[in-house]
Image (cartoon, rainbow, N blue to C red):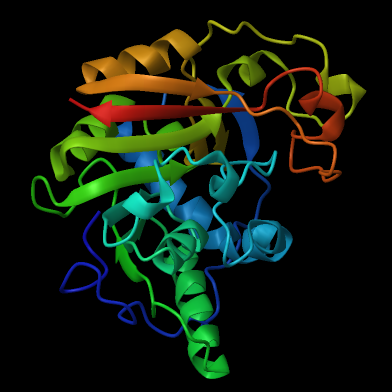
Length: 300
């Protein structure tokens, strides 16, 4: 996707953050499992997030916060987990957040003294990031200032080689691309040698279970080894949402083939304090099977 600004990371070039969102499709999409390639997946992801960003931020924005770095529905907080490395290493670091949404994680990084760039394919998600920047300005909030925002596809990052000291992604981009190796190679390209790349995705085991938070979501309903993408399509057969499944072994092989060393694989347990349901994530399921996998990698 082309950049949303003439210069990478120029905040405020995405238009009015309060402008109306794109309209919803007239017909409810139907769910299926079928092949979806790079172009179809990219187009569907941009359209889906542009249409649904408002509802998503209204429903989950409070949990994500605007000064926290949350790795997934379990609520694992980077301030406690330290998966990006020692906190004192963040100060002054150039950090790329891939699939940033409203850039909540980047805002936390900026508060630690880092220099984050928040990248997302969705124009509407980035408008919510602009809204948070504007709210800070209106309130006269002291802090590091607005986060730099870039609209682009994660498979074609608009940055020079070795531009960043760190890269991260909390449920962003990787599950929505047909070829995750393209993301791995691009992230490898823009990172400096020895830099960390930490990303979280839906735990692969969840693809064998129905996406339901209650008891009906506790029985295996599909093959874990079926990599056929999940697709929601309109009445014409055009994909409006696409998500791609990779097994745990696939993810590890992607990391290694992309030029990274796997330092850790974190499977957060569901904490006692978290009583929320988020889609198929819930205390009931979270106490029995993992819902999130976090890969902590280092560029060779």
